[in-house]
Image 1 (tube, helix red, strand yellow):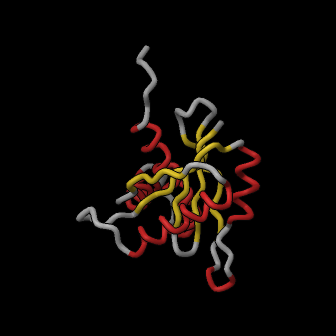
Image 2 (cartoon, rainbow, N blue to C red):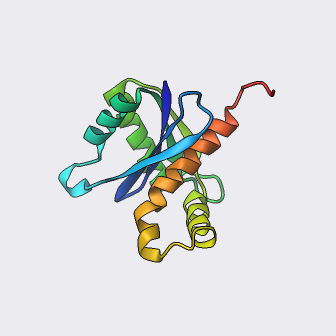
Length: 144
């Protein structure tokens, strides 16, 4: 029973999954989107849902800085609705403002990663941050 976190962009979808206890998020991969050909990565997501025994989704919701919903957030919500239709699993949304900026800053400051390498992993790391924020926010585990 795992949760899948998704960072839905216009060209890629970053994918992360939780551990079995729902405490930590791990990056899985980046799926390419080709809107012109109607390819949104759902076939690959289906494979990952089966592989990881996913029971729900968390989709990053890129709200505007003033907390309104813009075109990118609407696109993420549409993606979430399609996930619900295809997989019959619950979809939750996590505010993802600045997660890509945070992910890039982490890669530059902590890993000293080149721009080319950052581009290859940034969406996956953003998906991890979206999912981890959700897991931390919904953490109802009692302290030790």
